[in-house]
Image (cartoon, rainbow, N blue to C red; front, side, top):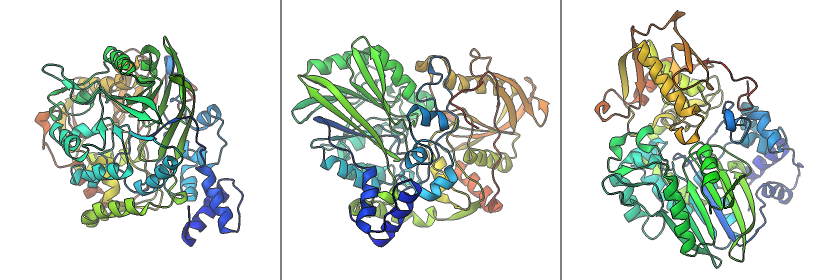
Length: 574
């Protein structure tokens, strides 16, 4: 890895801040940077894993959550650890590169010190480096790759399709990809990906006869070892996203089908079986405890950056469960030592992708620049400047979500606003301009329409109860969506451990209790019903108008529920 002067100075700054020895000679500085990505080869089967990139081709800032609650069997366990609790569990030293990569702690300052993360050109450099020491290694993509940016939306995902081919993805599964519609997904599979990338999903079948829509699995030979990769798409796509976009496809967890698929792959000669999953980590952990014969589940959907696998015991032995974060921020590397037809041992490392420490791959950078060029004028429109940190991720709200809620209430003259609990979306540091690109990072979907609905107080409670159960149901197999719906204007109390239908209390609007019989004007966006197509202008137009008038965004005050029965939960920090 060679560096120019600018890259060298960046490395010096990061190395110094990260607690590494600060050297004055270029060669020693290069060594300090390279040490972060030193990963000696191990075993004879290697799998590289990315997931939930959400169409982020450029380096970005991304703040990890300070609220990721777990209850019951999930209390105090991975992935429901944040901040200091996560550092203690994984023995990560505070105020280091890893502490910044895996937690929200001191985010503003650390982000300024260490710089942006991800970016496909920098990820490509790391992928090539890791593959160079691991002959035959496969690159797996866990899905949620084609959606999440203005350019992905405007190119019908072609920018991401081309980037994944250039990155060297071998196999992928699906979630948000399906929001481009059945025809588009199959077009990419049959044309762009033909002979290059396999889409696998054992749990997507036709609604009429239950025929497979995609391959359930593929077997690839890695250094003489047959390795099966089984696909598990997001099970609740037609619920969390519009059913009308996939009218002929059925989903579901399909645990029995997964067991049969594992057995079929073993019978076909697979010595290693890995599930490439978009279940979400809690669902993966339950599946790992119940399905026999899986060596590892490499997961996504919940955006959990988990430094080490969870080892789950089951009737067939054990299964490793990993989750590789989001936004191109991490590359997971799983090495197996396979002997006598089975896995004897493993090594795993989740590598953070720090753009300052990984020179951009020039071929990938050129591809990214070409894809973005026709759209730069729109992407670079300056809407406002933020004086506070803007972020999304967290169980109940984020400052960028609050900004969207405030815009909906103001522009739509609503009393209350709802915004989906999406986990995707980048972060902005205090003092940064808010560009149209940044707004689209939070809102670029194929059903972006805004709505204004007259809802009874009773219906408002029903909506909150339903979404809350999707998040906090004690059975992971019934956790069907993202984080809690974000709420503007309305205050309420949430008791996550209460029974279904009894978690939401004390709903208040401007200091007065919500009347179950009274009707309230509620603004929202991203309706999943087909009847709501084109109900109102796209949400980014509403928020952009609000920001242009505002010009300067003061630090955002979050509207958060009062939590009851949470106590000292290691999934929540101040």
